[in-house]
Image (cartoon, rainbow, N blue to C red; front, side, top):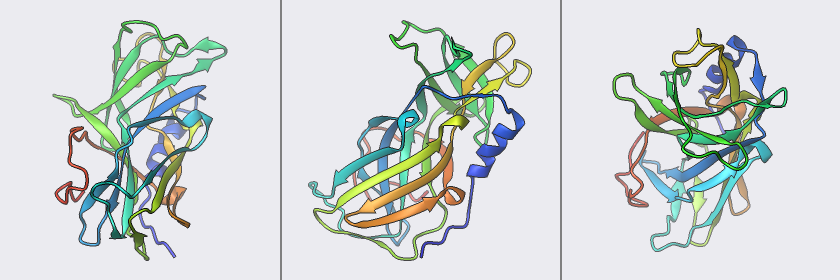
Amino acid sequence: MIRWSLCAAAVLAALGAAHPVFAVPEKCVVVISRVDLKRADGTWVRAARPDKPVDIASGEARVMFVNAGRRPLSGDYVNFRIVLEGALTYRGSVDGRASATASADVVLGPGLEPRAYRERPLSSASEDGSVRVAYLRGNEDPRSVEFVLGASSDLDEPIALKRGSVVGARFAIDVSSVLAYRASSQLPGVPGEGRVIAVPPRVTGAWLTVDEREYALAAEAVRLTAVDAVPSDENAGDPAHNRR
């Protein structure tokens, strides 16, 4: 009963085809920044801002909340999106050796492909050997981004939200797509003979559950895009949130 028309996951999968050497991360933490809902007039409003870190290497990422705040978002909605912080913390290994020794910035192109790698020395080593990668976009003045996980087509049947509704949002990622090898000749900034770096992952599904009803996005319908990061003090439920 749900129609979707655009797929961008194939763009990310194509990156793997060009560079077939991967390492599966033992740990890969992303932060669910917020969950937004779309009204029929095209306005997006924030339903929740959990700022919740989740380890996608250990399974599906999810967050739950109750529509019972000071300004409950009762009504009908035609779409949803899950917004992720534009960075991840990971730990990986290749042949038993650590795959990274420094944190880094990765500058992304329009299709989320890495365009440059900028290593930053670690101020202090983490206890478990994990490192943090921040994603940026732009050439002259790189800007911090957020990742928006959603789809281009609205639901055939609206999401009915009432006061007290229990809402859950979750998504799954192909963890094998997170780390990819890049030689120094393939990506500016990669030192020496190359490095296993974290790239935007391939999303395999996303789901929104309202009370007993589940709305699903299949892998071929999921769209992952990078947008300029939104200030953390944005007003919840503000109709002027945006119309992206």
